[in-house]
Picture 1 (tube, rainbow, N blue to C red):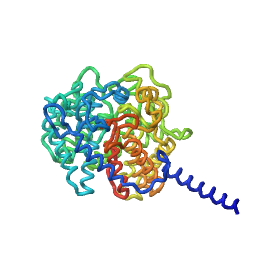
Picture 2 (cartoon, one colour):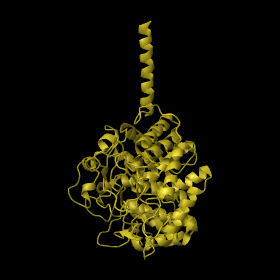
Picture 3 (cartoon, rainbow, N blue to C red):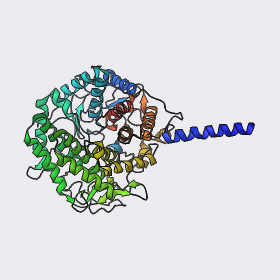
Picture 4 (cartoon, rainbow, N blue to C red):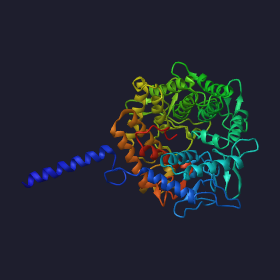
Length: 518
């Protein structure tokens, strides 16, 4: 009798263990995940930001959100401790990348989208009103003399000094801004911004060659992940105004990049104007991630099928040549002929940031030329809009998404990636005990699995999203705010907290189609 009882206990224990393992429900807390009030955490965080996170510093008080907030004091220090910021920002912690002591409308775009979404699903106008007020003030008061907004990765509004800060260059990479909200609040300012992009960023109006900065210095850097932001801006203006000039401009920049591809592989050069190893000869997940996702969004805005066609082709190309079936992961760099680059280059523009070898999934640097989770999101996004009829959707794109799902699953729980690992551990020594990753990485992975669950009905993907969400809450949620990283005491918008907030709202309504945490 005792032996049978022991066997029964062992069997029950084994089943419980397998269930928890399969659901990724024990990543951080050791308990089986049950239905969580994901929306409640988002609401709590946004309430805290509205009540304690606005600019009450300097002589001018504004309704803009502070970029760096101490979660223990709920105040924004004028000179926050550096921690990992030198690494995260590629050595530019006093630029717009971090926006210390100030506000940055660009970095807050995902947060504002979460605010609008929360108002829509709750009926509480508090969040949309706060977002509108922030945008209205920023578009009126935070504008460069040339008409471009004070936002992005180089410039920001310093709340303590009540002025522009940073190195004064306009650059807007990676994110999908809420152009609809911006235009609704101040259409004239948005038109000036978009027209200014063409005037100050485009080097050749005939070809669409462009520059990452609005100051045309000696370095001409036509990164795909900045060019795609311009494409998206022009696509939006076409959708808002019906003016053909904007569609033509979006298509011209797209063609600039599409023409700089290997026509046998469809692998595109990251920055054609940057000659040598880096730009004109290699392809990265920056192409299949940020560039492709912006083209897909542009297709949805305009109905221009060429945007979708090119996005799909470059996603398929990276999956074909970048997937390492033996290692069950992707390469970080490919030659345009489709060969992986396994060793870092010794010279060239920002050579130390090259993502040689296999991808580093839980990336550390904001703009590292490596965007694996965005590439994962883009592959699924492309599948979702490849055809109106689900039965006609492109199965190759779903296969690419499933490859990415395998990569993410194999790299759980989230952790410090191998690139810059030593430097992160030196600047954030607590990471050795906290583990975990940046809020952006949690948010993008959660959003990806929510959408994969929608696409496949696979319950496993819903459970993976829930496990990631619970770990993010366990490691990041403190005193009503989400920290940017488990090992530091700061909410930081540049760490992608807004992306996490939006992803949690997606998880809270997994049957509802949302735009994804981009």
